[in-house]
Image 1 (tube, rainbow over the protein chains, first blue to last red):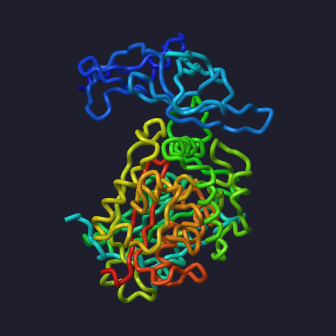
Image 2 (cartoon, rainbow over the protein chains, first blue to last red; image 1 turned 180 degrees about the horizontal axis):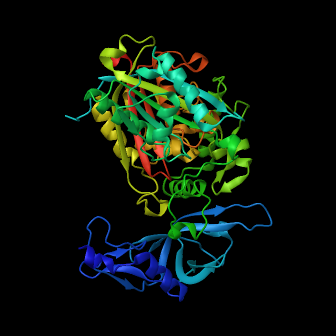
Image 3 (cartoon, one colour; image 1 turned 120 degrees about the vertical axis):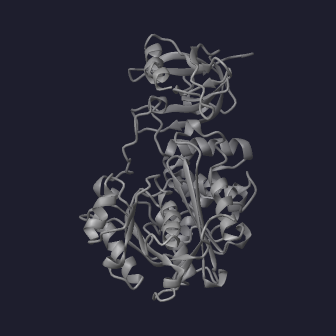
Length: 129
Length: 384
């Protein structure tokens, strides 16, 4: 078991993909269960046959807040996004005023950077998404 | 068969110290002063304590430091570190250890000088977690704000409902001479205060104070000989469902629903039997969530339950009678203060804020970002 696990480095791999502009999440080969945030096994059931897959990038805002700052530091959005694959992630919805982000909005992922750190952020997905 | 020694242990000493601002005092000095007061309240001296369950938020080795400071060589030490929910968990283990005869007198104690030392909330060195930190939520407020926003979306809870919680806490605090903030507070004051993380303003957030609290627990047979009336521990349970708010499955349902159900089963009572409720109100949404999850109203009805002074003095249920974390004291981890207030109420020693005829009190703890939930139910001798 530990030999098999020795080759799994989820945090490192996720960050490495992200640094190359790629957003990948994990999926169990045997059960199809998606996993985020990256782990060494599926939570609860323990399958370790996780592979990296590209999600659709589409999701729905589950909840949202605006982090308020003293000017000139801008306010910014922090949101929880339910990906269509069934996993939830923390992120930011960008491209609109942070207070105009609302629960239920359809959003689409892209890789950007926040204060120099590569990050998956979301934009409004537009009609039909 | 719940496995819990219902009523076979009790809190026989309880004290707080340094609620508010205590410049020039270290955290362990505050803890020691509360502890010595609680031990004296129990009619004991420190050497009679043989188990020390301690928490100093900034000292990972407080389990060693606190007994040494007090001059105790404990048979048992325990420092479960789950944030503000730790102390009900300590009480749970204390009851089991006392009942098993592993020890005879347990000190549960906490102290923090976070206000005077740093002026900000104590953060206790959690591991890096880029899946959250990259997005810079202002935690803990932002995590609770996300829960509040979701509750508002699903159930029609309003910012005015949240403000009612803060105003009720302030009205209780005005009856408590020890409370840190006692000046009048209106709904408009809360709504118009500086926004921290939408929809929570600074008045939806707990205080940042210094403070210490301590209790002494013994077996019930020994409790009969102590000076103050014992507060018997009838049930105590905890539940943990997540750490990060991103891993909380439903932001409107906390693990207090599970911990509460188990504690009620142990105690042989239900929410309608509880005379006084002390919940961990780090943020106004907490009180609404925990009223629901502990069964005082249906899921989603918490906002309407607190409306029109529902939990203020003279309302339908006495909640957070000391003024809570919102208006009395919040020195980083508030959970032990809910237990001390429950004991004070059951002793009939709460002065102007006394809930008359209080026989059953529920003291709740919350840790992390709604992560760890704990419940302790105490009763007077009449409930045994």
